[in-house]
Length: 250
Image 1 (cartoon, rainbow, N blue to C red):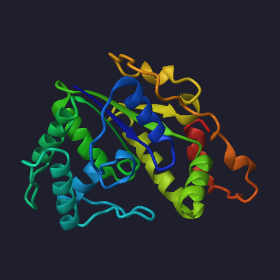
Image 2 (tube, rainbow, N blue to C red):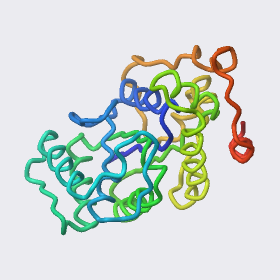
Image 3 (cartoon, rainbow, N blue to C red):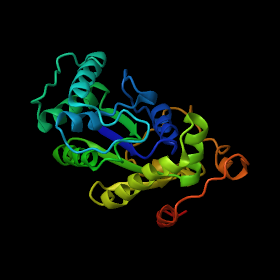
Image 4 (cartoon, rainbow, N blue to C red):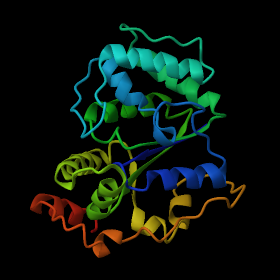
């Protein structure tokens, strides 16, 4: 079985990366989720059920209450042909791992999921690490850490959802500090959005045993540096975020 996880913030190009593998290489996403673009927020909700620490995200329902997380996970399972699964307050981390394993199997053992939420809270990363460690001999994991110039991320979120760059930059900062801290532990493959859309072969080489069955999706170069030419956008990053961006190659 194969499982690709894409860790990033919102507006970093994770949908494009997910679609690249889904439409060209036959990876599957969930049949149903209440969230956008096949995001499940699975480990975020598991962290809520297990009452693990989570920090609220900017303009997000994360973290869920334990009650909300249980209700939403059970609805999610039932809608994805896993009606026999039922989580409760006393469901253990080990059981949640088994549920997710079943989810991968239900998606023909070739499952991809992007999440612009899991990188922000270390509880989610810990859960992913433990799942990977348990099933490392049964599942071939690829975890991409997708980066993009912070100004491009903030600009996109400002245009799409009217996010305040001054607020959202803090989420970008914390997320990518976590990325660097967990890079070795999770064996994260760093991918720059700007390189990915120009040279997609580099990301293909990171996943073994790929068999391209179509050429349905191609990356677009048009969204590269719109933040530089929009006169209505004149935000300046905090100095520490500029330094972090430099560490990521920007």
